[in-house]
Each structure stands twice: as structure tokens, then as C-alpha cells.
Image (cartoon, rainbow, N blue to C red; front, side, top):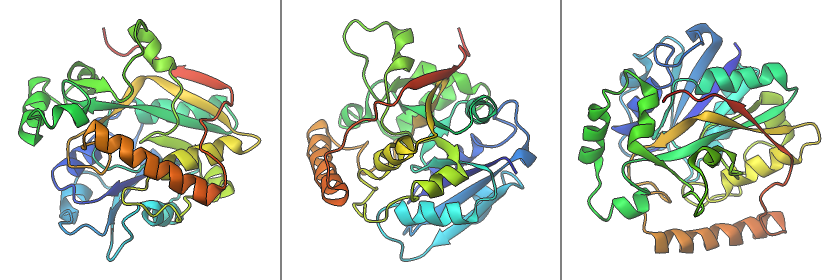
Length: 291
């Protein structure tokens, strides 16, 4: 078992099955189902998935429901990690993300050329713009379903780039190809050695804000602080966020800014220092998958 993927789900009956489908070996390229496992952790959903809707997609998929779970996904991630058998784990804290078809193979290849990498997959929104702007303008699940139908998903997963935009808007004048070089501070599909996850202390369950707040930026920063880790960002691969009423992605810009200040205050209270993006040297790995 080379890889364990931990996918956290909360009230995502529409979105999560697509996310799981995008993790399966008949969609992901250059990887066999026997190389990895998918651990779906339902974090106390009031409307949980039908287990068969996800486990029926592959023999390497395992589903776990946590009743009365905390509102933060920290405990659910630690629980998933306790079950993981892979030498490498990939954490997907938001189960509404659809991956492009080379994320798993390129993520794993990173561990063949580097001793202890921490690998970031860039996040995108599905739709014509950032969802905190498009949702108030009428972008919804029906519109998103139509977009996915328009590219005949999942036939060619790289066509997701035709119907999505990056989370972080390009600075004025930045050439599109340089988008991949913008330093990230978190990721919804973050790869690390299982040993590195535990060396960093796992997910700190003191980050108890619904959705996690600074949970994943904190984990990434703690991993970066390990002496032997190297930071790497994938080029040409991404995770695409489906609209689902998320705690931070499907709110207005004003609400998002207010949330961010709350997150930063909790981070400083827990860590005793302001949050900063890691300045550790950054490497890039990937390809140009589509014209």
C-alpha cells in the first residue's frame, strides 16, 4: 500500500460521490487501484451519504461515519490517519473537491525523487469566477451540473480547466503560466509521508472553529518546519471545488474577510505567534496536460 487518501465529508450527498469517483483508478492515470486506499470519513453529517454510493465505486474505498463529531474536521483527519496503511497520505479536508486525472500519480512520483516532500495541489473553483462572487449572482448546483455536462465529465478530467478559475486570482499583469508559481499556504489535497504527519503532531484539535479555520495552513506550516521536509507544488494538476454551501468558500467576500480575522486570532492564541507563510525553498513538478 503506497498511498492512503483521507477524504473528509460533511453533508455532501451531491458533491462527495463525484469527488470519490475522481479518486478511482479508472479516472486517475498511471496508478493502479492496489497502490492506494481511499478513506472516506463522514464528520457527523445530519444527512450522511449512503455508504454504497461511495464504496460501490471501488474495492479500495472504505467509509466511516463519526457520530456526534466536532464541527472542526481536525479529529476526523486524525481518525483517518490512524487507519491509514500507506507510507504516504494525502489529506482532502473538503470532500467537495474533484481532482484532475494526474494528481495521484504525480503526487506519488514526487516521493521517488525527494526524500521527504510535502506536496501541494493547487485549488480551483468550478464556475465562471470565485464562488463567493458567483453564488450571490445565481451560480448554484444546477448551473454547476450543466457545466460538468458541457465538458462530458468525467471522460476527460483535464477539461475541468475550461470551466473553472483559480482560488487565488492572478496578480495584474501575471502571465497565466506563472499562476502555478504562486506560493500556496495550504492545499485541499496535501501529500506527505505518514511519518511526517505524525512528526508534525498531526492535526491540532484545538483548531475547533467549524470547517477548521487555520487547521490546514497550520498543518502545512508545521510540516514545513520539520528539518528534513522539502516543499513542492504540482504544475498542471488541481482540485476543483464544487458548490455546496461551505463555511468559507461559499460566503461573501466581506464575510470571508471577517472569518479570516477570526481564524488568525485563534491561530495566534494557539501558537503564540502571528501566522506567516513558510519561506522554505519551493520546488515545482508536473506537466502541461492539455492544449
